Image (cartoon, rainbow, N blue to C red; front, side, top):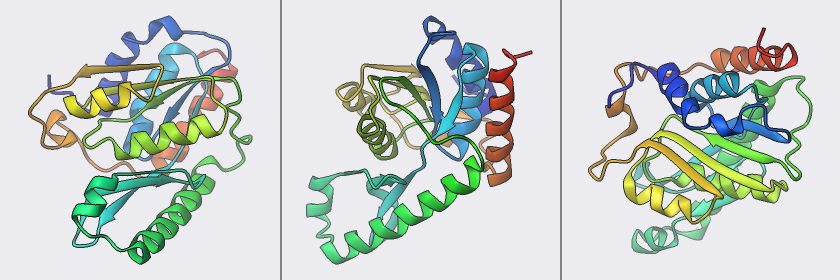
Length: 219
């Protein structure tokens, strides 16, 4: 299946999550930036509030695109210890990179959320949505973060994911839902006709609109 864009992926993903529609103490959390577009459609279809957690990839020293871990604005992180050991990543590099990415995640969250109320996940069911998952590093960091913030149940919801990453994330959450999980997986963008970059302004607008949608019951 090739999705037209992140919006279509979100609409289709919401159909697999209808049991959560109008459920009390439940919210959708998107992973910026692209994941927020998908999460917005899910939150609208389920009539649930939308918020964000910003997970930033921690790249390898000689290959920044290769994730050796990820960290969120809360400071919670996931790290692939085997890969870090194999690549002989120094603690100094890891510490500096984690600090830099944590600060960037915090900066983005403050810019995106604006005047929205402080994120409250205590005893909530949280549906974590991204536009896709390759290594799973950012999703694992986000899962760890929401658990630390007191979430009672965590659901990972994805239009597409690598099969091995899906199996790994299933061990970390209450439920993992994916529209497709091919064995052969190169990149998330392969499964979209339009995988253009989402802007900061789009994220801000979607969060604002989702807040209005929820307050008015989607009217």
